Image 1 (spheres, protein in one colour):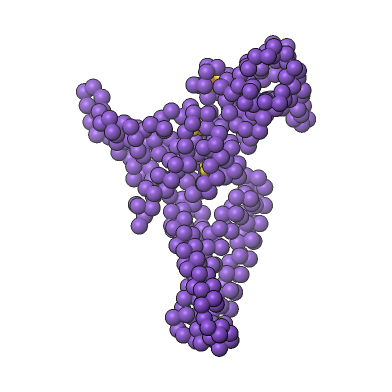
Image 2 (cartoon, rainbow over the protein chains, first blue to last red; image 1 turned 90 degrees about the vertical axis):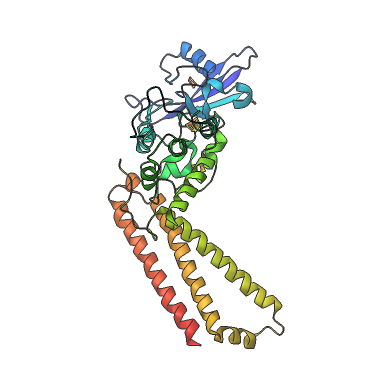
Length: 234
Length: 124
Ligand code: SF4
Ligand code: SF4
Ligand code: FES
C-alpha cells in the first residue's frame, strides 16, 4: 500500500491549508506520480491539480514531490517514494489557488519582462532569417525550457523578491535571446538587466539546476549574462 | 517593461556592485595574507616591528584601503540582505521605514569606522 499525503486548501471553505492522507494500492507497479493523482481523483473528485500532456512537454504539473520540485508526470514512485510514502505540495512560494494549483502570475510577469521574442527591425528576407549551424547550436540547452516553474520556485532569491528578481527560468530565456544571432536587441536587453535585482540576486545556490526536469542549467546561463554585463560595463 | 532602477545600493548598477564586491574581496584577501605573513615571518615579532610597520605611509594607505574595502563589501552584502528580508511585499509600507532605519544605522556605522580608522592609522 502506498501512503500519500497531499496538501489541501480550498480558500472558499477552508480556514487554513492542511495535509490529507490517502492510501493507494499500486499493485506493485512503479507508477508516475501523476498516475497516482489521477487514481486518487477518481475516488475523491475534489482533489485539484493541473496536467495536460502527461509526458513532460507542457510544464503544467510542476509540484513539490516529497520535498523536491518536479513534474508529476515524469517522476516515478521509485524515485519519489522509495519507502512507500509520497508527499505532494504545491510549488513553494507562489500563492495557492486550490490544492496543488498555484497562481503563476508572478512567474509569468518575470518572463514577460525579458521580452521573450526575437527582436530584429531589419527587413525580413523572403523566406526566413537564416542562421549558421554553429549559431543555432548556441541555443541548445536554452530553447528546451517548458516554463514549468520548478526552478524559480526552488530558488530562495525568487522567494524573497519574486517581484524584482527575474528568476532562473526567466533568465535562462533572457540568455536564449541574448545568444541568438538573429536578435539585434542585445544592448537594450542588457540595459534592462543591469539593476541590482534582475540578475544579481542570483547567488549561485544552484537549486535551479538541481531540480530542472529537462536537465537545463540556468546557473550557467546566468553566468553568461553576467559576463556580458561586465564586458559591456568595463 | 518595468525594471527596478531607482534603488540605491553602492555602485551605479548591479553590475558595478557585483564587481566592487569581488574587487574588495581580493583586496581583503591580500591584506589578510600580508598581515598573517608579516606576523609569521618577522624575526622578533613584537611591538617594535609592528609599530615600525605602521609608521610607514604605504602601510597606512594599504590599511585604509583594506578598511574601505571592508566597508564597501559589507555595505553591498548587508544591503542585499536587508532588501531580501525587509520587503514591502511582505510587510507593506512599514518595510520602507524599517529598511531606511536599518540602512541609516549601517551607514552611520560605516562613517564612524572610517573616521575612527583614519584616526588610529595616522594617530600613532
Ligand atoms: S543559482 Fe541563482 S537562480 Fe539558480 S537557484 Fe540559485 S540563486 Fe536561484
Ligand atoms: S529551466 Fe527547467 S525547471 Fe526551469 S522552467 Fe524551464 S524546464 Fe522548468
Ligand atoms: S502534464 Fe505536461 S509536463 Fe506533466
